[in-house]
Amino acid sequence: MKVYVDLILILNFIIDFLILITISIILRRNAKLKRILLSTLVGTLSILVLFFNMNNFVLFIFKLALSILLVLIAFGYKDIKYFFNNILYFYTTSILLGGFLYYLNIQIGYKKIGLTFINNNIKLNFLVVVIFSPFILYIYIRQIKELKLFYSNRKKVNVYLDDMIIELNGYVDTGNTLIEPYSGKYVIIAHNKKIDDYSKVNNYILVPYKTLNYEGIIKCIVPKCVYIDGVGLKYDVVVGISESKIKMDGIDCLLNILMEGRIWKYLNY
Image 1 (cartoon, rainbow, N blue to C red):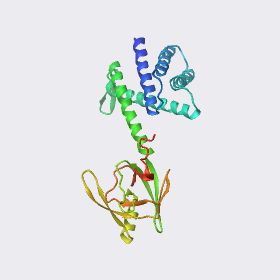
Image 2 (cartoon, rainbow, N blue to C red):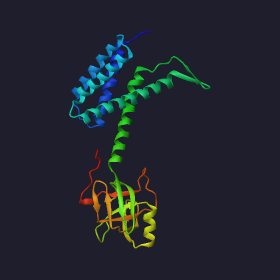
Image 3 (spheres, rainbow, N blue to C red):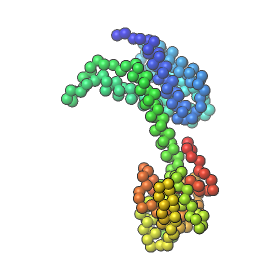
Image 4 (cartoon, rainbow, N blue to C red):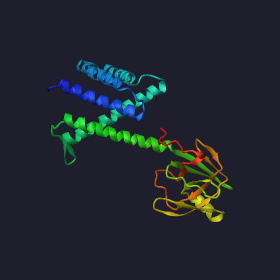
């Protein structure tokens, strides 16, 4: 079997570089390009060691030490948490990319006949790897950013009423800037059966609202206070009752982005 060392080195350089760049973007390390290139070069040249005979244990130790060295060269060392986060994402990104390329190779290299998969001797092309690797890592970066945005703006909310406490999962909504015009209280929007039932037997107020395409009136209850995780107790809040379910996973309350007299920090991750 022919082994093209130059292609192996080039491919390894590209893959290592993409992995380190991905980590820098996701964790916002702002690593200098020359450090990432140096780390990539060390990882690329070290691949030549794998052509020597090693038992599995020695090979495992070598790869572990190499990954630590690459991360330290690229991002340095600040504290143990910083270091372990870098290592964690290094392996997570490597496994994700490696798993995707392996799956792609299986799809290309095997054909299905009934319940049997037969090798058709087609190998994953070098150019295919180069083209698809940045694409899959780009998708990975976007998904991680969206997840971080979602969970960083997710807040635990407790609504204190006369004789009960209603627990909600809130989300800081940049589109909710609604203010009750008479008292100046902030309006948070909730979809919750207990709150809806409470409004049917207790006093409520009507607050006008206007969006780009709609305008109307929303029914609101006035709680004793509202507790928001990371903010504390708020007394200048009314709870608007949404008739339709909030279309966000696990969220039943949209918080007002203008609360505390300031714009909440967005993209806080």
